[in-house]
Length: 145
Image 1 (spheres, rainbow, N blue to C red):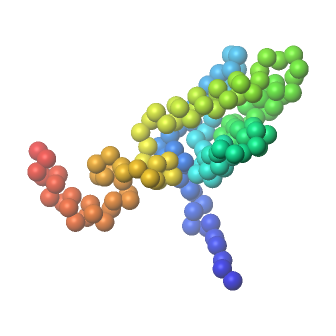
Image 2: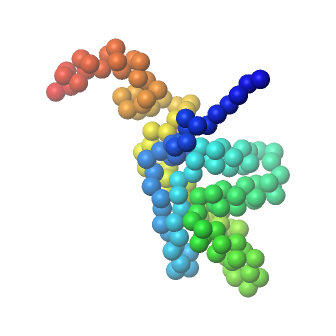
Image 3: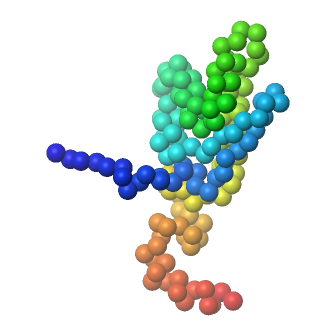
């Protein structure tokens, strides 16, 4: 029987490594959103794929926000969405989510989960290129001066 363990990965890197929590306001109320984990980001992307049911997509966005928002925001957003007289709606939720992802994406990151299919800039900072760095980079820094 195969066995899988997450013990060595208890402190898994954030999906957008190096990103910081983002504080934002909605109608004057202050909230905090935390960078998504690789699992959270993966579930959001898969639920947003073509051919997915609209209900699944909406639920995935709500679940994603629940996972990245502080507890205060989770409760407030759900309360406001359920309030018939509150203009806060799914379009606002979508704008918030898109704004947060844009904010995190605008910052340089070194996350393998964020861009595993494209090469890193110059390869010098990428951990994926470590074997080639060891054989070539020892002489490169002294010739750069």
